[in-house]
Amino acid sequence: MSNAISITFGQRLSNWKLIFDTCALPEDRTMDTVSKWLLAVRPCVFRMTVFSGAIGGLLAAATATTINWGYFSLALLGLVIAHAANNMINDYFDWKQGIDTEDYVRGQYTFHPILSGAITPGQLLRAILLMNIIDAAILAYFVMQLGTTVLIFALAGLFISVFYVAPPLKLKQNGLGELGVFIVWGPLMTAGTYFVAAGSAPSWVWLASIPYAIVVTTVLLGKHIDKLSADAELGIRTLPVLLGNRFSLILNQLLMASFYVLIVILVLTATVGPWVIITFLAIPRLIKVMGIYNSPRPTEQPPDTPTWPLWFVGWAFYHNKMAGGFFVLGLIMNLIVPVELPFL
Image (cartoon, rainbow, N blue to C red):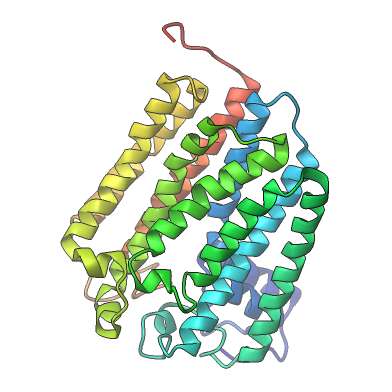
């Protein structure tokens, strides 16, 4: 990828759309400055954060006496900024510790801000600092408006975000990365957004956050399955390294399937309205993904796999997008056309 010399606005838009869709930019594309920074923050995965936050806001809209949509929107913006910062933090510390190299998987499947030479370590650190300053300002505003309880959500999320890769905890390297992602993209983001929007976070909201938190976790687990051999060689003890390839593949399928079981439980307990059963329309995609997980991994790059050599993570994300999208749609329909099941 070369530095931009002459590139039209249309080409820029095409680059940005491709990066938002795939977090990758083919080498035959001319990179512009915005594309460089979009690649650094990896926006293709932001939808998981948007879904987690949206679930909290929609649950609040359905059950709370009042909801502050301005607070909700600001919280959602803060979450996306935090996700962007987290992606850059991961790249910086993994590079700093000598994990991310040209030969390691992270340096192969897509643009690495430092390894590519496009962004210096100092520039990346300054970008991380800027993102965290913005989030700190948002947090300070919420503390003034809502009190110090909001600090629990924010600081817990920041703690997991930083120590996911940073010493001394290095959660990812000690088999706790998946748990950390589950906590952040479930209880912290969903219940936290509910709290900001409604001023409280009842216990049932924490339970309602679990289904989507699980399908976010399957994405990370799929990524770590793809990197299992490389991580094992470096002594990085992700969950797949600890459990082994075959068991990890089975576990990820069970987690994906459990999403639908938990949705049924939420409906039968009247925790959420029945429209979320629309998520069952994603089951054909689940079956397709399970077929991929039960088949041998390709030995060569298949067509339309821009993040090769990653494989299983892409299919987990393929399922996540539809399952999460239908869950959010079901919550919206519960608001627009509320329905009560006669036997509940």
